[in-house]
Amino acid sequence: MPTADAQLLSDIAELIRLPSISSFNPELDMPNRPVIDWLAERLERRGFDIVIQDIPGASGKSNLIATLGRGDGGLVLSGHTDTVPFDAGKWTSDPFEVAEREGRLYGLGTADMKSFFALVLAATEGLRAESLRAPLVVLATADEETSMSGARALTKGGQLRAANAVIGEPTDFRPVRLHKGIFMERICVEGSSGHSGDPGQGVSALEGMHHVIHELLALRSELQAAARNEAFPVPFSTLNLGRIAGGDNPNRICGHCELDIDLRMLPGMTVAAMRSKMRERVSQALTNSDTNPSFEVLFEGIDPLETPADAKIVRLTEQLTGSESRGVVYGTEGPFLRALGMDVVILGPGSIDQAHQPDEFLRLDGLHDGVGILRELIRELCLSD
Image 1 (cartoon, rainbow, N blue to C red):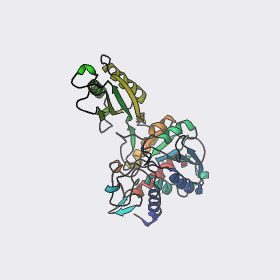
Image 2: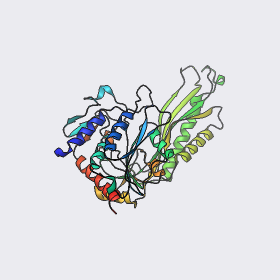
Image 3: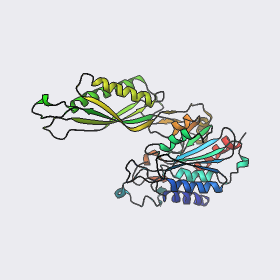
Image 4: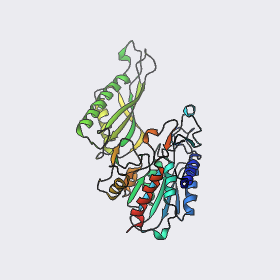
């Protein structure tokens, strides 16, 4: 990389040194405020107006909304500040210290997705509010890797407005305009325990769960037959039976059984409708059973993302990257920004294949070009008439 990019590499290293793990396990969960404060200080020095939004009920968790310029339209450059936990014994270097080897930067969050903020800082160097005809917003959120509480808070805060948004998740700078929706649910079946030698002494929750699984697989087949979208590498909705647990001994009738599922749906569907349909089908499956179902939300979910193919931000990112926009099977904060009225494209450095992996890395080649792409987006959407 050119020596002029030394500051970019330094910024990536500083961001990686600030641990901000997000986890449902309280022993692993960390505040993201150090990252927010670091970004806020850098952007405030450049003339951005700074708003730090604390997340209700989450100590040490905040969003940053940094705005340069005023007016209608404009562009949001968005990313999440948290990372997933890491497998300590499987890393060959300190996950919180960037290690450069063979043209790659290794560290927790290099790909997913702290490095994007360093590229944003490089792309906004020298900008002045008086030169912008539409606002530029840098958005940094909390807890994307778990509850998405940061993005959910944005939809209630009323402080974020723009026409376009780029979320810098790792896409190898190939634009993404669609992704599936997702929710996760625990289905519990209650029976009653008893001695296995006399089946009449109890009601098997495991046998009830057998009916549930049969119904869920039928629902999955129906969903896959009903709709396909070839923009996705997996062009249909998926339903995964991820975990099952029940009973405690071979000679006892199982009194309780639970199943954890993940359902990913195509654009055109909603979490609310699909969760309702799933629960209705499970309840119907147990209508003639002596077992009773109950449901626990494991992940509230996000709706699918679909930005129109002819949206300006889609056409512009396709032109700048030379790549046709596509769909992906993972989720992002995009639906929340869409709900605020923005056209959204997912576009950032690194590969999703490196996300959540030991020895996560970011390739150095392409970073310089990535800064150029962001500068062109700013020029087209915030500077040009």
